[in-house]
Image (cartoon, rainbow, N blue to C red; front, top):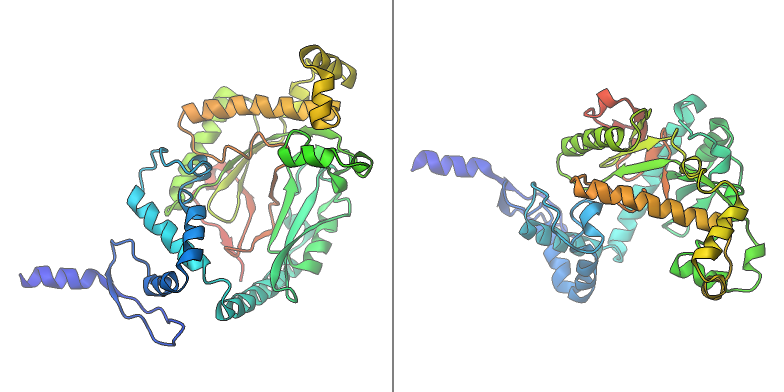
Length: 385
């Protein structure tokens, strides 16, 4: 019996987390259990504010998997690495941790952490050159957004870059000035990307379209969109995300475009982006949609134009092209689902999505988003000092 006791003691670890009262937890847990080192800290806040924790729990339940299965809260995805009971516990733990954000102590800690992150990010952008940033093709037709930390408001704010980003030098000036924790660009190309209007096919867009004078405040002409696949789901082992990325690349070349010159981007977080910049959806649909007049004629022939105009406010060739592109991509996504590929199924068909700029910093992980070759998928992300 002595060797067995020694083995069990060797597998136990002691929680060293410091609670708000200044004392350590010192609870021994088994390494194979799902209890984390903050379990006593989380349970304390659960008993202190159970209503808020319950609200956060409803938000996080079903979101411990990848985005392919958490959008509707379903768990029938077949993920082999974690059980439903573990997901339930992780969701509760995440809800408890979120409920602490409004406390004065936690706000002060978060503020100091964000200031330190901003300092490191600004130093990193000052140390790199414009060649280290990889802009997408036709960057002057895309909208760029930055997420910055406002030290006065003590929160993260989203800003749209009003300048036309024609090259990396222009973007680098904004990065050095604002030191953003995240930088994104629009996956679609627009005639006036700095002033994109609402989607007329969305619920919020329909309400905005009814407002008087809204259509004169922006130009909403969609110029096309390449093919973006976001392999972005939560896994303990990043190797599983790399293996899924390899499957996605092979599937895309076998089923969509055999001559595709794919660009693989490590997001800096938990996943990858697979992009085909040479495959323009608008060019693919050009045989069916050669000009705006034929688009509207085909639309009027298949739908009651007056009824649709009453519901949506206005029909344009650009909005019809967006809807056709969205539906066409959804058919490809359904094929990926049937073949068991686990990706973010909402990113690919949405013409108004944004994606991280390669060469910029992932503020949450403090790593660099970078373009990689297919041979370097299994390498780790580059961390900033």
